[in-house]
Length: 488
Image (cartoon, rainbow, N blue to C red; front, side, top):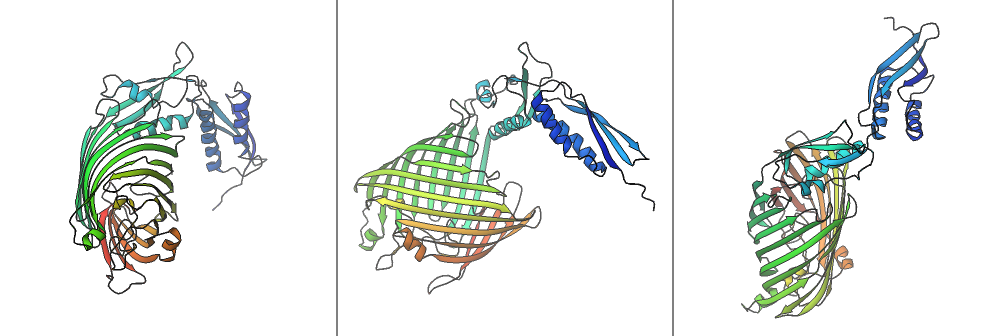
């Protein structure tokens, strides 16, 4: 086979770029230089440069930039290639108003607040992608299109037109969880989106489970005054029956969250919680009386989140810190501050393998007479799999479970996606609740487990089996968990 001669690049010329501003010309020259005079004339590299030049023009505000092709003049004598790229930048686009379709159920004001540019800003592809992301994040639209008007208005600005198709406003959901340590539970939900045309949502969630049952009514109002400033309110009733305590409660809460950028958000709120509870001490004494209290708290939170797929994270980090000062009064009066923190990270080791790591810690400061659910407990599907629910918590001299003033838990998972529908997981969990963080570290117990994931299309269905690594007398050899979504 005669492959012929190899050619090198003798020159690279550009047409259509003589009138570009100096800053854009410098950027175009930098892209052009990447091909390199004297390098081998590789077809893929030559075509890639064409795409890079058009992309750089668009990044610089030339929304309609395109290429009319590449001219190549070959010299067989010198074995060289002279290249000429025919670019058509078009106008440098300054963005104007956001044009919203008529006859939408969503009010114009609720869509215009998603706009992420000031009039006169230069076009940039990432601005349009951010707009699409914001519109998609409202969960109000099935179809989303963004069109830049090619003709400028009288002010020299190019309107940006949204093409939207509104989705269904109601949805229902249901779920089932099964665990040898936590029992059986079912959940059901109903949601009405865009309740008043401003993107707000009314929701009802119900759960009936072996240990916890609850009914919650929630309302969410997004983008108050600016994009990302969200208000939420919630009221509900709950009943809990655990080895450590029994509790019935009713609460009402409200909070406001404010993002400072795409990843970092602060929130503040207030909660009024009425509880009726009895703990191990009262039960041991044979008393049926309940302690009735009302707790007023002011939870504060900070979140850093770069995770894109919350049901099945593939990459990114998630860090949160919560501080809850509060006061309880009624049968028992107490003031307290409850501090919680968590951090998780997700890394792709290969196309099919993801490593996930999570750590959680909590500290309680204040008086002992608070409702029992303000203390910390560990063990079970939500913290350390392989152990009975709440079993990794402090006990009294009679072996009754009591809440701790501190808690630490950590998990490591290796998630292997074998196919579109099936995946497998190996994991290690560790944790303990105690009277201090130091004691929680010192008493920490560890388990190992394996899991199967089935992907029906909306998120994985999870089956896990775990066993304690240092099993003690009286502990079951394995615990089994079935639920929806990854464990964290």
